[in-house]
Each structure stands twice: as structure tokens, then as C-alpha cells.
Image (cartoon, rainbow, N blue to C red; front, side):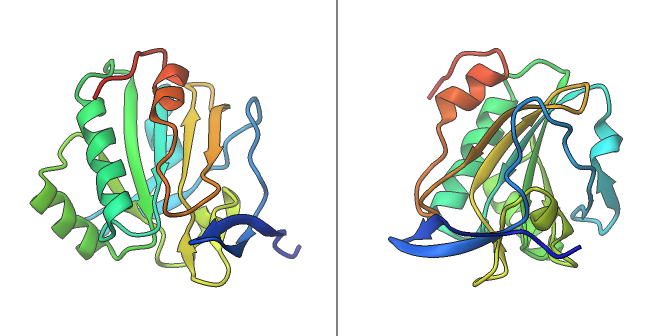
Length: 175
């Protein structure tokens, strides 16, 4: 089966880009995945079965908006109930993610790399064809593995709607 291409769904500095993969919808099952943790171990969606997962997807941790987004979710993660796991996914190498997490003191999130085969990007519909990076998006996956919230940020250089993400988790927003 060929990968679905969604042209012009998102932009980068106003220029249209193509996303590869389906648009995930609320209420549908979340695709499983195998991503690399900073220690090169594999992490799957099934590894956090029974928990709510906030999956923050960024193009690269070494860019300003991705840096701010990941720091924001790291800060929010400290206030979330114990049944919530916060994952940040990018196509950055695991070593770069580990370096970034150390410098940013991001200890409440788990950074995961899709650099190997961008299978997560294809399954979640966030692989940018032109750049081989992941688009900015946020998903909340419930303990039942169904999508409770899905946001594909239209302009890659913009932030997700933090208030809506936190509301989907059943908590109020903070600064």
C-alpha cells in the first residue's frame, strides 16, 4: 500500500508542504509505534498501556518553537496526574535529544526519535515529505488507546493550542 500524501495541509513560513500519512481523528485507535529512546532502547505505545499519553511532535528540538513547546510540556508534566505520560517525538538523533534534554533539564518528559525509518511520522500523518522532518502536532491518547485529541499545527513555525491540549487531559492551563 502506498503512503497517503496530503498536499498543502501545512505550511512553513507560508509555503505549502506535503504530509505523508493519514490524518488521525478523535475516537479512532492510535497506531502503535516503535521509537528510539535516548539510550537507543525501543519504546512503543503499548509500553505505556493503561495510561493517558500526551504525544508532542516537533520538527527539531534545536529550533526556537520546538524548544519552547517541549519546555512548556515538561513544565506541565510536573503538574499532571501520575496516569499521564508525556512523550516528545522528533526525527532528531537520540544523542541530540539526550543533549537537549540535559541542557534544558527536561526530566518530566521522554524524548523519542523517529529518525530510523520515520514510521511514526507515516502512521500519525506528520512526516513532511519535502524535509524528512516531522510536522508540529499534538495527540492525546487515552488508556484505551483511542485518540482523545489531535492537533496538526497548520503553520510549522507556530505553537500548538496549549489550552486545548491541557483541557483534553482534563486539567486547566497554566503559564
